Length: 546
Image (cartoon, rainbow, N blue to C red; front, side):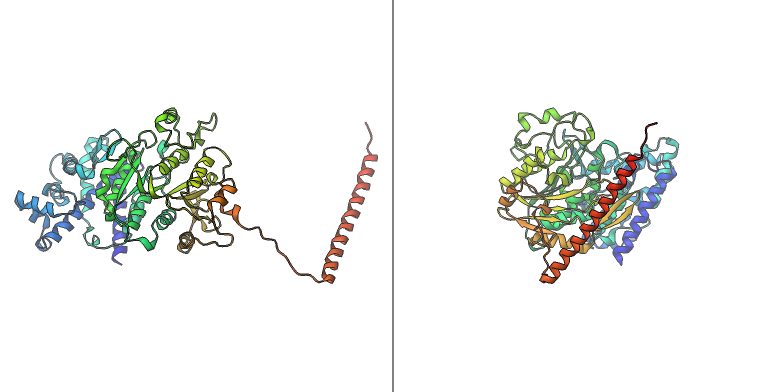
């Protein structure tokens, strides 16, 4: 009940912030998501600081105003308090608190005070919360929010409206709870800003069913709590849905997240997701940049690309990489792109198969014994030639394949491409699981699009079948690497299903009766055919030239 109440209150806060943006002309504006997410994060960090401070010094919880009690501390006492806080808690000063800004609303140039406060928080905590680019620049936590309002005369009122909304409730009571509050909250927070209308670098929100299946197969229940000090990587991380799911399966404090994405928007959303999900320690590993051309993460020596224990990815299927295609097809990248670099099609430029580059990069980036789960177009698993087949042959010949799950159509509402999940396991030397889940799910309308939803029971069926390596009629097969090679390296479960021929026992009399029925039917068809022939000849004989 507590979680439901907080989720509802939090959604109301988000809706209120969106309403303020709309009232000041920023509804559906390109900068609206920056304002919403940054203001929401400011509120979250304030409440997290209050929660930690009261836990360290219980007297603060009994004070009439914990903000005033902290403001009355000496500089040394405040520093000591901050040192005792966890590494994922922002270091705030009394002038950073929402209550302080609320009390200063009548001050001249309030918008500047508001922006300066957020910027000072960002600078003070830059080492913890800054996201790096592949060129080494640091992207700070907060922008100057009021400057998104083009009319300077409206900025003070805009910032006052925001501050007045932030004091209505607190997250403090929820920090002791352990449940999936933030997954639903994060999706609601960004639902209007993570769609396929975003232009060149459009992000697609990975469905929870896909994320759950990937995490549950990579990290089965039997090994949870037994894994520690592992690295998890996504080279096209988007807003981080896949990374959050695998981190939760392993344990947030048992793993480190590494990511790279070319989109500035995605990198900012991923940072927010890490903060909400107790993964602040991984923020320094979030890189905004071109993974294919400039892969950032390197081993300690600095030259070789870093290898990872777990990799998850929903890479772009179609994205223009013509500007740097020739650079990839060079000696420097040849080992990484072992099956080749896709050509740029002369026509249908939007069909560029950039996922082939990501998939090869992922395979190359796995540690010995490492595991990966990657969303691929279903056409990849059966292509008879080219780079797709070369990648499959590499996985089979090197015995590093765990299996494939072919998903229902429209599992992504934003794309009609049928998808499968490819599971790579560099320790799997024996049997491979192929599942055809294309017949599962219920189709529903999602705006103008149609989407297929899997029930929890269907998700669990896929996971249990894969992890148990079960062969289920017309659903799954368990095959050897030799079997796959003999089928031209096809990874489609349907090509391995047994062909069933229905037999029925007949007595001699029943057999004779069936044969007589076939004969009578043929005699009737022959008679009908003879009649049609006569009629056609009659019609032809009646034709005259005029």
